[in-house]
Length: 165
Image 1 (spheres, one colour):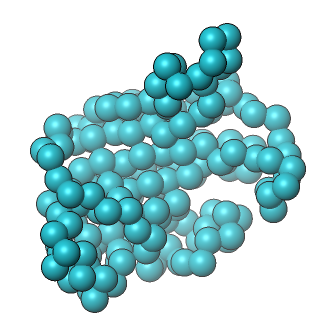
Image 2 (cartoon, helix red, strand yellow):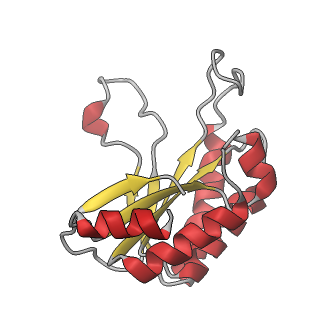
């Protein structure tokens, strides 16, 4: 998100953005092979907060790589910006990706998300969504991990756009 991009989006009628920050931590961004920096991500979120009526920040966490403090720190930073919504996604590992194949650690993710929910509640956010709707899964198939989203208040109808920092 740059001032030019923000102006173009606003000029096109957008009043909400979802920024794929992924993390505010340099080490994690390198692990995720993201072409950005923590400083660029912070500037993008600060600019979005100044320019748009609603800002969502997307974060990725990897319980096989990070301890729980990484996501909790990223959430703390997102909440400190006063964003309207934060969506978290577990990193999905497949053998054909640079991250390799790893066993899905559902229990560890659930423990981490419980801690994240407690942190969110302590900052005035509430959980608004968790994973895909069970209706999208075949009977007997456990749902794939999806986003867990925390919001600060009900979001009015807006014209959203998704972008990278």
